[in-house]
Amino acid sequence: MIYQFLYYLGGLLALPFSPLLIFQGKRVRARIPKLPEAAGPNQGVVGNTGRPIHLLTLGESTIAGVGVKSHEEGFSGHLVKCLNKAIGRPVEWQVIAKSGYTARAATVHLAPLLPSAPLNLIIIGLGGNDTFQLNSPLRWRSDMIHLIDAIRQRQPDAPILIINLPPVGQFPAFPASLQFMLGSLARLHGKVIRDIPTLFKKVYYMSRPISLKDWEEKAPPGADMNAFFSDGLHPSELTYKLWAEEAGAFIINLKIL
Image (tube, rainbow, N blue to C red; front, side, top):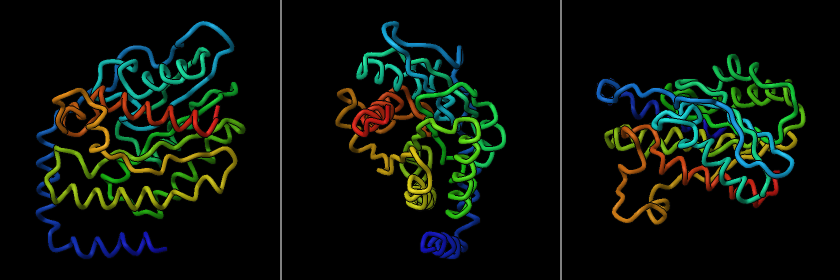
């Protein structure tokens, strides 16, 4: 597969610079404070008129709400409000997520926690940690397929939406060299799972990469690139809001619900 070849080629080209990249990675890790996951309830309901929609979000730190105080300020909270406004029905939501998890860890530890009662939509938000751990495109793709298989054991009929991967190559906390290396790998990860919706029924993927330049037009006046991050690495509430609004539009346009 071409993406696996590019992964190995990139590794070979980066090998002479590996001491510098390792040093920069350790320096970034030392400088970035360890932020907690969103506090407060990990489930709730928005709206009170009509038959409710049952939604569950599953994933890594972006779904766990790292960078904001509560899930209301995070991706899940903003998505729920967006869907409630667009559809006009209550949305019962639940978050099952853990900061630092890869797709493989989510399969082992998160998928078994899914409720057996039917859900109307499951959102998967992963990819950042698989990039940080330098997992190959084929391993990432295989782990995502296994994750969906595990979800299907608990939820055989629920639509599943894989949201686009975090914009790793645009993180301000990273020096240019790490932005290039990790951003390139994240793009390979994004491309290698494009065919997953063809392998399952009712599985969708937001394949368009996130562009913070595009989001700048939607940001408040005077907001710079740092406004999109809480610590140079994790999203701010602004990013969670814009990201959720794009996911909500994707759901509505494809009539997933």
